[in-house]
Image (cartoon, rainbow, N blue to C red; front, side):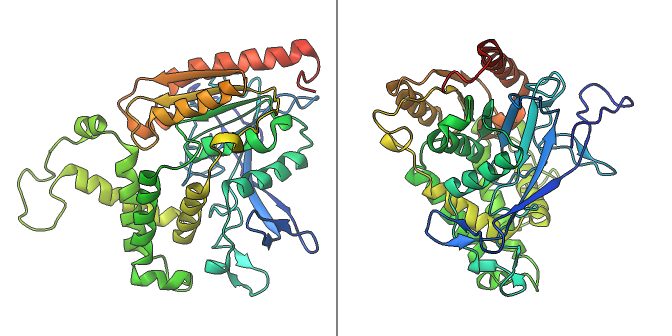
Length: 391
């Protein structure tokens, strides 16, 4: 649904939006996964912002991080649920809806309207649970390609996202370079390091160690709340930097004195417990397991991103943040070096921020200036050429 401007609110209000659903791979046309198995039917939840031009040259695909969803901007009518990247998407923002048609879909394997472990298995009439096949970032992107085909868009102006969204942007660049004009991977990596895999394994084990997980078959009984809450607490520690935690919490006490027990004495303890408790209300534990495994499997290092001898014509801007220790800048620099060795038009920007990995969700002004200029140059080049230069 296009943005509906609300004159009663200030100019930063993106508008009321509606989540829509696209279903494909029905009977007789199942979707083949990277592991060789098939899945279908598949539904992808998505939202759109702005208007698609007549020649369909102004479409941008926004790609969300691990626990994100299709609701990237605006609010749903009668709800106070601002989209996760609202400061970046809208009129005159980084992804300017006065110029561009923005699409954001919930990934395959998710739990916010797209087919995932909590979806009903048509063969059993019950949630898939662990009968859901393992998926990869490539599977997510291949499913998104079906959605883009549904819109009749031959070539996206840009694919962009942070963290796991950046991995998807790189996967688009690798798998479908002829279908994109540009890519903006933010705070991401070509592959997970052992440390990154280790954090995800601890996250998964915390969920599976909860007796309420019931080997994944908890849907009739309720979420494994304790395990999923701890998993999210671990995640939040990695999202923040030491400096941001010091500025936000320091060693401040909640009640000005120690409890001499296991209550949340410190503000940071209370914050983590609050974050964990809220997360279990909005995210499926099995989806968390499957998606963390998918990003651990992701590997586009070496010749896997762009094979030797392959010539592609895509503009790329890689963005990283100095205090991001979950996806440190050296991993973004590896992406840049690899792209430049393949003679891909690549720009690299390392931004100063105290927010750690969360910076890509918070540092809107700095990213806006970079992205606006990058997109303007890409789009104007498209218009001047009158056709796709890479054909």
